[in-house]
Length: 506
Image (cartoon, rainbow, N blue to C red; front, side, top):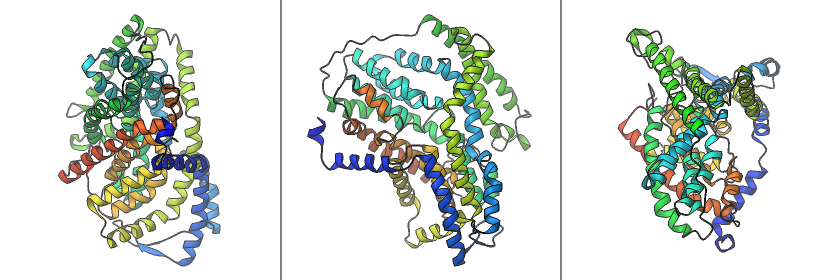
């Protein structure tokens, strides 16, 4: 099948894989970029280039030379602070303490399996895509649980198992930035966006919050669930044809102890949510802001620990009921394992933190933002064409660099100031990035879990390779990109806030 399909598209995919594999690891890439900023700052500074600061205070801003005596002192004196101060570091680690317990006790896996196995046969495809989208609350757990489960369910129903795998993979990966709840992705990207916005307007950045895209990602769940199910049943499954392998699959339901754990963890979640509501809902509640405000309030500033607690408590209860947690030592071990799994992110935070800090300190973000905005204005690129162009750039970069946080750490300091100069909010820029990044996750062979998905698929098709897998997923990517992008355009046209206190225009 793969030989038959080799052609221009296949060679394009081969080129992406080849070039992507030639790129250094994101950790190394950020170290190179940090050094590049240092040397470029010296060159640009020598030219005397300056711009009028676009912020409220105005004034002229030039590029600082980080190779000067003062610059070298800054590099060494700030290195530890740059690491500790890297915006997503603390919020991601704190959030993962709660999510990690829920994941490692088996709560999240049981929730996903229980939901998918309980939906009516006629709604299986919808349920599978929906579960995949919702799995992003648990970071990467959905990649391991849902694609093989989707294949098993479809096979047991006499349908092509690869269609079930594809539907789940599309939900998990292409729908990664859609959810009914806030997930670890929101603070991880949001803190980078807030930092980038502060370069232009610190006062505006001060009023931003990590739930800046919340309204839009809720609406996205329903759109992508329907679109994902239609693509599966109308395009992907007919194209795969009738499955000629062994359709006998063992659909294992939840064990009684797992059901009991889900019931008690659900009760504990309701109790925890009720306790938090008492701190938020009453007009004079302690977590409200001045004059009873919610958007600008201690509640919005405390979303990270609240998210962590709302995952931790049900996870702990589930673990106690199912005996995956017997004592405090088990809790400590599971929390340690969660932090150990974040080792790559922590090292990435060190080099990325240096790059972001140097970029900000050198004033290159402001200068690039002003010149970039002037260039786009000179070619009359604004409004919807501008957003589409930005999304295409973000989607293209995603083909070569898989990590969402790594890409946004590179792109936010450049594009957020440019878009602010053109009158578009940082919140809109972030959401446009998330749409493009998520939609193209499933067609890049450099995505972290792509090899695992192929391994799952080879159980049903021994000849399954990268090209064949991407050709299966390509319809999801294109249609998600178009329909999700159209939703964002409609959102822009109506001027609806993307989240609490998060407008379209700056």
